[in-house]
Length: 377
Image (tube, rainbow, N blue to C red; front, top):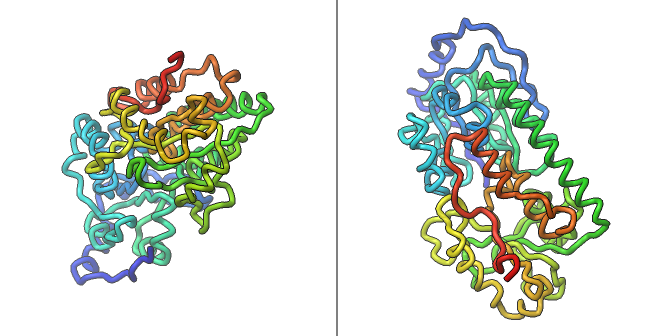
């Protein structure tokens, strides 16, 4: 997607000088922040007018619900329409969320610089993929006096997870909390990797996006998100080297999947709306519904002969967990399916529940990860 050139209306041009005169600009200076890409972000003072464009749960976990009092705008559709069941829960506990102004988003190609400027922010927080789409506009936005901080949980590069988390902590005045969460993430990741390596095995794994249901061949992943997570635990991702483009995602030929014969298959679900055949996971999903939506995949042509299907290793897992600060819970679930002996004492769902109870303001419930065939059946 190509970003359009930055054009300012007369009204927006008049708004810009006001940004320098916002109340509180005389507050104590802040140390420079290093963002996910290693960029130095310089803020004149603790930000009081923030625009957040992705990773809303991460912003909430690090800054706490109170950090939203300083948010004046967001890329709202990515939360309110992509995952409305999640947005609804957070709106119930964050007073200004439902009425939050929307600046558009790069995914739909409607990110509005004019709407951004009208909010007079003193910090813009962007996911790495949005930052890349905006390209030259970033320099123009920064030249207009708006610092841009990049966070990245999609790439599944642990150093970026940590840098993003600490950057959010400094920006929201919660650095100690951020470092605590980052330490938990690294400790959990280290333990998972150590256990996986102890297996001495490299099982074959396949994941497919379950948005369209079993009649549609969904995307799989290689260089980021689920693909990178498989790399972190030494699994043999059958999609590696088979997907074109820098992004490393797209559908695989069904015949190739059959020939590759994965040991374990995951279907990535979510709480998509108007997708009646999609694999449903998340807050609103009960396990019976999730399994009912997952079952048609086992009946796909040729799949009955797959090792994964014959051994009962067909799983549903929440897609949002592939780009989250608490994704170590999903990684533990994947690792337990691939290396059961090494993870017999690990309860990924309990880990996810504990994270919510400790760092998030919403009650944990629903089905986020499950096997089609119950253990022992």
